[in-house]
Each structure stands twice: as C-alpha cells, then as structure tokens.
Amino acid sequence: MLLDSIPELAWLRVDLKLSDAQFAKASELHVAYRPTCVEMCRSIAAAHAKLESLTHGSRAISPELEDAIRDHARVHAECHKKMLEHLYQTADQAEKRRACQTVSHFNSGRVSGAVC
Image (cartoon, rainbow, N blue to C red):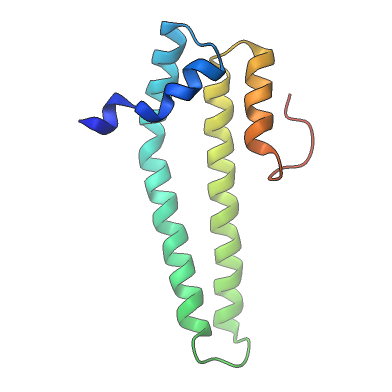
C-alpha cells in the first residue's frame, strides 16, 4: 500500500540525519500514530460542525453554544498535545541537537517556551 511506503517521511530522514535503524523506528512511530491522527481529525470536524450548526441563524450565546465552544477548544488542545507527544517521541530517534532544531521548527509560532 502506498501509505505504508511512507514517502512523507523522506524529509525527516534527511533533516534529522537518521540511520537506517533510527528511520525504521521513526517510521514505526509514524504508522502507529495514524489512528490517533485520524481520530483527532474526526473529533475536530465534529466540533466544527457542532459550532457551525449552533451558530447558524443564531443571534445569542446559548448554554449549549457555550458548551460547544469549550468542547471545540478542548478538542484542539488535545490534538495539539497528542501531536507534540508524537513529535517529541519521533525526534528522540535523532541526535539531540538535530532533534531540538526540528522540534523548534515545528513549534515556531505554536508553543512558547524552550523545547529542549
């Protein structure tokens, strides 16, 4: 299957200068993370749809809309957390300096504070 050949990770091997063994582990982590990513995308789409449904034609903030706004933020935060956990786990396959550079690149503009 094309998805299992993981062409989207070619840059990672180059950027982190991964050995064959390191790249194999990073690839395993990537494949293992896919179901989580798919589930988070589904949750985000559902949260967006709920907000859209509740705001369509509405002119006031209802308690149900307040709950949907909170849920929307929670789902995005959960997704971001899981993505960062996956990124850190993948970056751990590389030499620390290169891993820090890569994590910093992905975090720029997203998360404040030091990453390494």
